[in-house]
Length: 110
Image 1 (tube, rainbow, N blue to C red):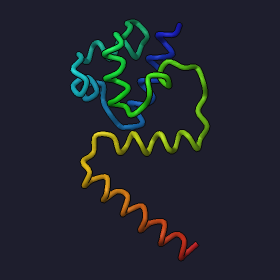
Image 2: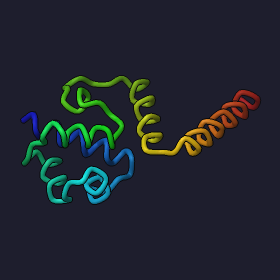
Image 3: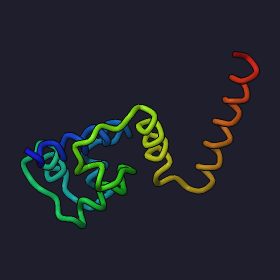
Image 4: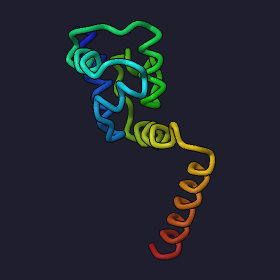
């Protein structure tokens, strides 16, 4: 049962990042078939592979293994971290500046 919950969380986080199973597999040096089996709860992950998947998805191992529900505000923060994961410092700075400009506009007009 726990393998199914783990697989479901991995799939949910992968989809939030618009990653295919193929891309995730490539990024963590695993086969696409293996990722599919993990997401269906048919196979388990080694600690090393679990760590690689969690890092690529921008979540903690604890989150992937826990049964706790994350609040919406924590979920938004986690999504921001996931989107920034793997970006260059230049890309991160650009994203932050874009958000600052957007908030400035919102503050002035709403």
